[in-house]
Image (tube, rainbow, N blue to C red; front, side, top):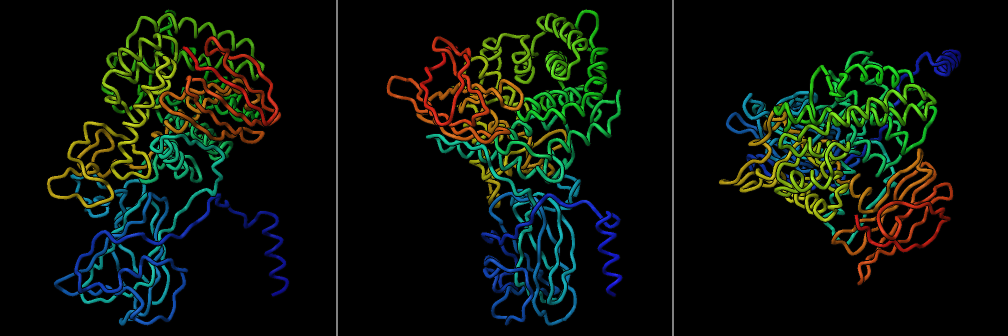
Length: 598
């Protein structure tokens, strides 16, 4: 035996038995309330399920345990609320049921209370796509069972068989997540904005599993175009994390050129833009150099996708986001804008990598694409208008006045809303953008959301019930009754990372942190408080966090205290306008920032 143990130890040390280690942790959580029960006298001690447990079966008396009894005429059921959206499954701890054998339970998971109550009927959108949310499980006698791997907040448990008695000591959620420090933060005198920043960060945190997913219930995939807002939120809330590079490498490795990532040409463009922004924020030169071959090949491919007049000719699936997917004119204007951004990012990437020749070709292509793009229009969409403004194809002020601010938050989308907010900020309409954040993303919070959704429309609001309650008579089920394209009804994801844009936007434009040189070696701090009186927060850099507080005095001047790592050079706006001038800072320091007039 001694020799066998030595051999096993040697084999493990050599990697023979080595496997992939999970980067996540598990947290066990009791439900916080019981929303509904079926078969009142058939369930006793249900409130005992709300107590914190220890995951251990015990020889406990029947008076201190939840008991569910079924008959041929009645089958008890219970609906539990775990208080917030989670990624993971469930743990059942059973007692000594009289039959002394396994007992079946039906488990239904829901991101809304109504989803946990529904059947998969082919009509309401409910599915087991990507993750099982409706299944039957055998529970052991006097034991522990774990099952489930989905995104959920609500759980319905049914006892489907006749004449059985189940003793339940505990039902706990098994929350699986990366144990991360929230290095970034945002606080201001508007608690609604504070909740929105935190909810966006938490939405992305849940999607930071082994890879960076699009959604934790559905679309548990690396949709690389969708990841751009998520990556910006990672930069603002968590800083450097390998979930980003693992995901970028995965999609690169399964997409040999000249294929398009996820089959969508714009998603390969987004991969390029993410590489640019990730290097700008994190400054990992070794990682960027490892991407050079693919970056070069992708830029060479993109150079073949504009004609001699600078007009984009992208093939594959031509896509911006779902709400704009039936508007060919908007898609063309948006793709033209993305090509301008791609070549602009290509210039900087090539210069950082020492490829001056390809940088020059990208700049020539960018110039032609800009001239061609200025002849286009957004085709009535906020998506294309935002991209055109950010690419210099349409003056930001014009894009804001004609399209982005028209109707307020009406016409916003969860994915491209991030770029709409950015374009409004570029137009100097910070107050209007803050109102949109409060109205659009805040409305999801008003409906009971603890994470932001795959899609949302303000037109859904009148008469809608909250997602954390059963839908009363006369109210609309906002989860079942709405959604389009691939997210109809209960298939709609209520935790989608692409909806986290306000988190990154608030850190960038209100807290005011703009990264100027790779690795945050130089940052500009230009706050835009709008109607806020004060804002404070932190921003992660590779050298540590920057601590920031801005306060507005009675004359409208903003006084700022910034505590920055010594390795970080901070810029502040010149007094007469928002252009930045160099200011080397040593922490802590205090400066006065005059209001920007742009």
